[in-house]
Image (cartoon, rainbow, N blue to C red; front, side):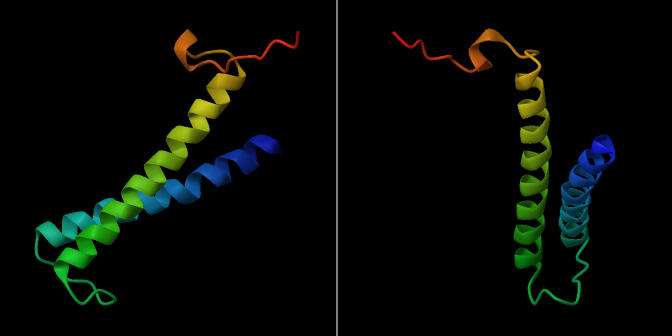
Length: 83
């Protein structure tokens, strides 16, 4: 059940990133969608959605791999020694 929730959490930013790619592609072909008054604004919002969605998914995967010690030594968390 927890895996299904994790999948749903990852799908929402994934769909936002895909929509951002669509907005940027439409701008390159000169297709202006209704909520945007300018093509450059459509491109910037698409770029923001793509970067935000991709960074969320990447951070989620990085956090999961760090908990399971599957990252390189330089990315592992440093444990503080109590002396």
